[in-house]
Each structure stands twice: as C-alpha cells, then as structure tokens.
Picture 1 (cartoon, one colour):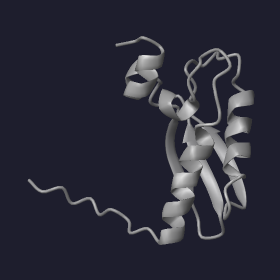
Picture 2 (cartoon, one colour):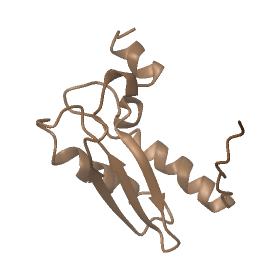
Picture 3 (cartoon, rainbow, N blue to C red):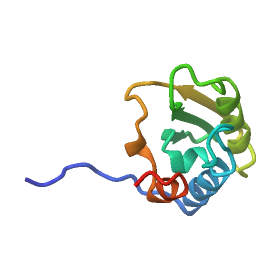
Length: 114
C-alpha cells in the first residue's frame, strides 16, 4: 500500500526559517538536564504561518516539571530571534506524554541512557 501523505513544498525562506528555528531551540536547556530541549524531544510540532507567527507544540519531561513556566517562555524567546518570525506561542501538551524514547541518539549519549 502506498503512503498518500503529501509533503509540503517549502520555499527557500521557509527552509531557512525552519533550520534557524531548530538551531534556536537547541539553545534552550532544561535546567535539570544537560541536554537541549530539541534533542530531548520536547518539541512536537512547529507551525509557521504566512505572517511569520510560529506555534510550537511541545511537552515537558513531566507534568510537575519545576521549569514548566520557564522552558515554554524560553522557547518563544528563542523563536523570536529568527529573522522572519514575528510572534511565537509555545503550546504545552502531555498527549502523547514524553518518554525517553523521544530523545535523539545524541541526547541518549550525553545522558548515558543507551
């Protein structure tokens, strides 16, 4: 059976913004874990509209995370450093809940979690 999902075609500017958003997210760290939020797998989805607004759907490592207010604000601030982004909103969800399976191999290596 064929996969009928159509991948969006990004403009060069959208590709640049996407790459720069990933780089910006990699500057934000969970204060209790020495790994950035992107490699931890806390960023679930990023939507950029034509006006430059970015919605970032993300999670935290636990619902009772002590940095629950700090990390989303830092994600929004990081997104705003990208040229072409005019506004940003971090939307926290716990569906699906975060697990260590969300982490990149790089994060697992840093945390010795192989």
